[in-house]
Image 1 (cartoon, one colour):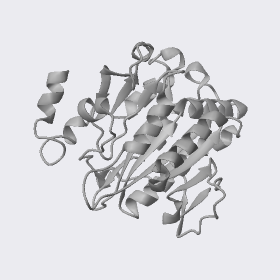
Image 2 (cartoon, one colour; image 1 turned 90 degrees about the vertical axis):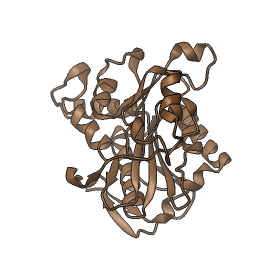
Image 3 (cartoon, helix red, strand yellow; image 1 turned 120 degrees about the vertical axis):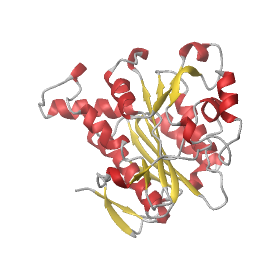
Amino acid sequence: VIELPLSLDVLGRIFDGSGRPIDNGPPIIAEKKLDINGNPLNPYARDYPNNFIQTGISAIDVLNTLVRGQKLPIFSGSGLPHAKLASQIARQSKVIGKEEKFAVVFAAMGITFEEANFFISDFRRTGAIEKSVMFVNLANNPAVERIITPRMALTCAEYLAFEKDMHVLVILTDLTNYCEALREVSAARKEVPGRRGYPGYLYTDLATLYERAGRIKDRKGSITMIPILTMPEDDKTHPIPDLTGYITEGQIILSRELNHKGIYPPINVLPSLSRLKDKGIGLNKTREDHANVMNQLF
C-alpha cells in the first residue's frame, strides 16, 4: 500500500509523480496519511453535482458549463494548445461565493521537460501556484510512476475536499500517456491484451480514477475533474477517448481546423457537450436568462 502524507501545507507545492517534493521546499509534515487508491464511495452517499465552476473560458462557461462534482474531459489532438488551455483553466478558475474555499490539483503525466518547465513557470508567474498542488511526472520517469501519479493527485484532492471543505478542481494531463504506461506495464506482466494492445481492464482502471470525482452528502467540499487526453490520429473512436466518454459526463472537443484559423481556444462547441450544464446555471447560480442565451447561441 502506498500512502501519501498530507496536510494543508501541500498547497503551493510541487511534487514528482511519487509525491516527493521537487521545489526545494521542506518535506510535508503529515497531518494524515492516506492510501492512494482511495476508499470506494458508497453510491448512496453521493450528492448530485450542482452549482458551477467559473473557468473564465466562454465556450465552457456559457455553452458547456462545468458543474461542481462533474467529470468533463477535454479531447485534444497532438500539436493542439491543450497545455496552454490547461494552465489557463488552472489560473482563471474559481467558485463564486464569499465563504467558498477553492483549490486546484494539477497532475501531469509523461510530459517533456519543456512542458513541465512551461507549467511550473506559468503557475509561479501568475500566482496560480498559491491555490494549487502540482504533481509532475516526466516522460523519462518510470512508467510505473506514471500509473500512480493521478492517484496521488486524487488522494490529495479527496483530502482537501472532504476533510478541509474545499472545492477542488483536478486537472489531469495527458491521460493518453497514462494509458500507454498501463499498456507497457501490462505487456511486461504478459497479460492478455485487449483492443489495440491495451489491457482488457482499461475501462475499469479509468473508472477507478474518474469516479473519484463528485460530492458527498453532508460534506461541503467537491471534486471536479478535467482529464485532458490527446486522441491518437484525432480518432475519437480510439479506445482511450471512447471509454472515457462512457464514464464522464460529456466532453470538450478541440478542433484542428479552428486552430489553423488562429482561433484560441479552438473549442468546437457543436460536438462538445456538458451533460450536467443545466444543473449549474440559472437564477442565483449564473444568470436567470443563461439557458435562453445558450440556446440562442446554439
